[in-house]
Length: 119
Picture 1 (cartoon, rainbow, N blue to C red):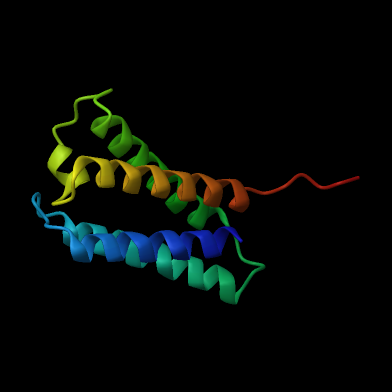
Picture 2 (cartoon, rainbow, N blue to C red; picture 1 turned 45 degrees about the vertical axis):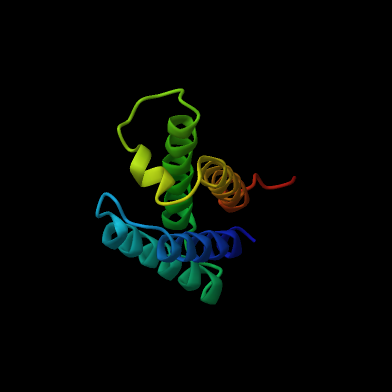
């Protein structure tokens, strides 16, 4: 389930980057990061016995990025990345976008973390 959550997260971010204006020139970096996370997710889906830590790290990174975006848009921190997090969207839509992807990334991390063996 965690790998599928990352796939949904990557697709949502890719679609969002296609419809938004790229004010800071970070679209290429975002596409590369999303492609790497998508490849890790597909690799884990094709070979479930593989190590989940690389994909968990990607999901945690996405969680952190969207947490910073949500905190920036809420005015809790000043990062000077407001234009990156809003793109060309109205403030409410950009905030909702960050909140949804933050939640999805959090669930992906939760689902990818190893579970203790039941004894």
